[in-house]
Length: 304
Image 1 (cartoon, rainbow, N blue to C red):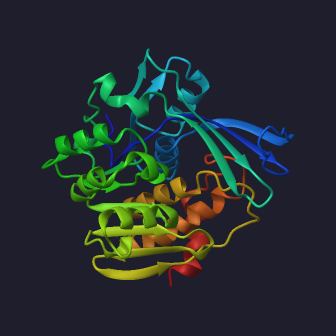
Image 2 (cartoon, one colour; image 1 turned 120 degrees about the horizontal axis):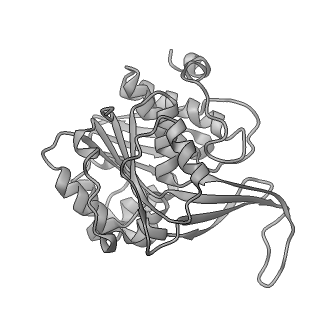
């Protein structure tokens, strides 16, 4: 069996991405201008993109029996290690409806599915993570993830925390403190960073004394604390932006791909921005995966 370099925990989701001329007011109906249903979820997006970029990657998470067989095939075709993608009976698969307006602002309706109630399922998915070099925890039930992190202590992998949009409502101060204490790295966007800093009593999330803290700032690029040094990571320019869904996820995948292919942490963050620049060119997080050669070519002028 392939030894994973990276194991990813997060939602495995059916995404419905729609575009509207404007967001509706209360009790108002607006027409959908375009609609696309795709495989998605934070865990899936990071893991599949990393696998497509050549990284031996395991996805660890739960799905319902309604999960389309074609999506399982898509996972396997990407090269993903899927022996810890577990089907359960008590929940339908997680679902995310993303609504984009013409300015690519988004509103999201989300059904947690089994990943949000993993403690109730009672299966500790630790086989792949315990033999990986890198482990990335993104969205899912906080108490379950904290429990798994305890189980990984002393087993060697570098652990990254990435609570993403669930920072606001699922990760209170006490849980965040535990998450940070058991993690080597932290990923967030600028909105999540403000909440994390407030709940941990910090001026800025980059004040955390961790091996790596990454804050993505949208069109302004990214900020990273790397071993106590603050650096700015530029936006890597690509084609015309179409849909921002999953750009943060594929950024993370690009970072791990950079490390796997022998680049430094700072260089890998530039390559992460390059991967995200491809994602935004088409609708859906996984519909425009570049080759690794394309990633390096687009990033080369930013790596000098």
